[in-house]
Image (cartoon, rainbow, N blue to C red; front, top):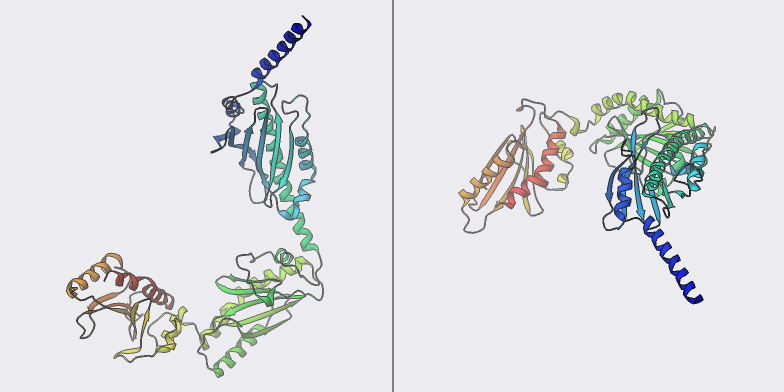
Length: 488
C-alpha cells in the first residue's frame, strides 16, 4: 500500500508538471503572433519574415531614431533584428549603430551608452516583463552587434508580447545612444588629431586623418619608395599626387607637356614654369622642383616640399593641404598658357587639321612604331593587324578615315556582302561617323573595304576636339570594326 501511495503521488506530480509545461510552452505560431502584434498600434516592429531554411526564427526591423548631426536631423531607422525561439528561451541578434573602430571603447564607456548596456546586460526592473534578459554587445569591425536571450518559461503569451515591447523600446534607446556617442567621440578624436604637434608622421592612417581630403584606399599608389603613403587624385580635373615622406610631405601637380618637345623648348618651358611657381609658394611649402614624371612619359611634375621640422599642429598641416588645393585652382590657368605656348596636348585642342606627328601623339596607340605610308591628300597612313582585323588608318587634311579590309570566303556574293554591311552600319552605327563607304579593295574582287570618315573642324558645323576624335578612333578599333567584320 505504501508502494501504491508513493506511485500515486509520483504520478500526480508528473501529471502536474506535464500540465504546467503544456500550459506555458508555445508553438512557433504563438511566438510569431506575439511578434507581429507587439507594438501593432505604432508599427514599431515591422517587416517580420521567417528566416529561410531555419525553424522558429524571424527577421524583422525594430524602429529607432538616429542621432541628429550638423548636416542631418534625426530620422527613423529600422534596426535589423533576428529573433529565434528554442522552446524555453527567445534569442535576439541585432545590428546596432555603426561605430568607428578607432573609438569603440570610448563609445562603449560613454555615460548613456554604458548605462544602457549595463541595464540590458542584466535587466532587473521588477515592473518589466523584460526582467531576466541577459545580453552582450560586441563590435564586428563596423557596427555594434547585440546578442541576448530571455527565458519565456512560465510566461503567458501576453507577457511574451509585453517583453517584446520593452525589448524594442530599450534597444531603440541603446541604438540612439550609440549613434549619438559615435558622432561626438569621433569629433573629439579628430579634434585631438588636429591639436597634436607633428615633427614627423610615420603612420599612414594618421597622415590621412591629419590631411583630411583626397585620400582613400582606392586612390593609394602602392610603391616601395612611398610606403608611408602615396596618393593620386585630382583637383578640378588637374592630376595631383601627395607623398608622405615621414619627416616631410610632398604635394605634386602634373602637367601634360607631351613627348615631342625639343630639348631647347623643354628647357625654356621648364624655366617659365619655375619662374611662375617661384613667385609665390602656397603656405607651408618651403621649396619646389620641376622635373619629368618618373613613370609617365610626356608628363612634367611640380613637386612642392613641406618639411615638418618646426613641429606644426595637425590643424596647420591640414591648412597647408587646403591652401594647396586653392593654389592649384589659381596657378593652373597660367600653367596652361605655358603649355599651350610650348607643348599643348593635342587631345585638348579644337582640331582643324593634324600633322602626321600630331595624329600619332593624339591617338597614342603605337602608330609611331609602324611604317608610315604615303597617300595622296593625306598626312600619314598606317596599316596594321589587330585581333584578326586588318586596319588602314589615314589622316587626310580635312578628315580622319578609319577603315578595315576583309577577304570574303570563296563563293560568297560580294554585292550581297557589301549591301549587308551597309545595312548593318545604318542600323547600328548610323550616327557614329560623318560619312561611310563600303567598296571592293582596289582590284581585289573578293576583298571588301569598309571606310568611316570623321571630319575635322574645317568641314564640321560644330567644334571637333582631339578628345572626341581619339574616342572615335578607340571605339572603331576595339568595338565597331571587329563587330562589322564578324558579320562577314
